[in-house]
Length: 92
Image (cartoon, rainbow, N blue to C red):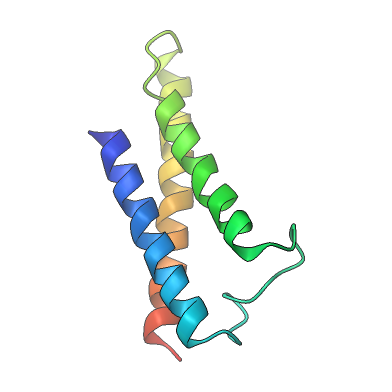
């Protein structure tokens, strides 16, 4: 269940970022940063990493504390990205 929620949040963030890139291409949180130079690939990586953390946290071979830390880190990462996307969407 947590995996599907993480995918849904990632898709939500991706849709907002695509909308922002189309409507406000000059906003500093949407434009290219000093990363790899390809905005959609950078967004893909920034959304893939927390999903990988959440997927790995479902591995029952890991210790419970490790699983919790991975899941918490992934969810914090996703929620911060969602919060930033919503902030940019509603504050021009």
